[in-house]
Length: 453
Ligand code: GCO
Image (cartoon, rainbow, N blue to C red):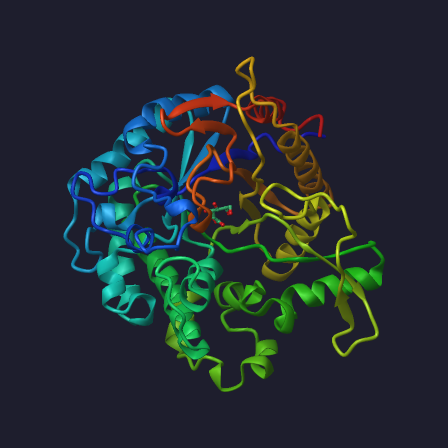
């Protein structure tokens, strides 16, 4: 049986990773513009100043999406392109115009737009006022969300508030390897995370208030998951327990930290012992704002962690992949069955339809002497992961769609342009785009609704 006829087949990108035009048409600075100038912050000193020049080349890019056969496209809005300093509500019309043109071009090509409001490029001026540590930041984000929903909500019905709160908070404010590149004590990291969730909640209200099309709203966390190495009942139970309670191993990457507040209305009590006095003190009103009902449970997913039942205090133990286990060129292991368990566990816990908002791999792609890009590992990866997604659908988990990361090669944060995650190869410069073999293959999967997976 193929996927449902309404299954959403898409690909994803984000503003800072592809747009370029960093100082054009009134855009304000983002924390990524500033972080990239810091010596040693980004591999080879790369920056997103030009990126894929999508700001100017979007007509070509939407045509290519159509050529691949995509039904949907997930992209993010740059907050400082729309509200340059982020907090005073002064709007940059030229920024709004750009997204108008992009959305219209998508719709003309029969591609459904999915907007992410925050994919990490916070206005620098917001950071100067404390960023997510400042409780006002949630209000500023609400205002920006309302502006975006009022302008685009007549043509766009799918909204994702925050992309991967874990990465924004842990890598940005605890490890310091992502913008803004600072290292805060844990209690402040948790406080910033709480304000980020409040920003999500306030944005949900703003979208519902200002969008004219009925919106479907979600947040897209990192899908950290443990999966059973052999699928025995004991190992499955071990994987479930580890996925939502393995604090000592994965710390704030454990998905219940950022997802339980949204869907269950409280932070996970199982983290209290680990966090001690750092466990956030919150109000009922805040939790009510954070936990407004959502329409889907979006998840970004790349790889999982094998686990088995064991005679340990937690009842499980993580295990190592054997030597020579398949890895992508980003050194992430290839773990397709983890996708089955991820959507199964998330659906069990949060009781909503699942939407995979990112999944993909970096590969050492190049244009061969015949002009083709033969990325067979990507084809195999897509087949294996989608096969497991299909298995979940067949077992009764409602899955609304799948977005491949990424539409095109782009700026991979601290790794610069070194990894290539795209379905479309980008030669930068001269900004030449070429469909990889996997793009054609994905197009065939889409055309048959996954019949042959
Ligand atoms: C992510 C990011 C993407 C990355 C991708 C590959 O949400 O993690 O959204 O920006 O490029 O995940 O690391």
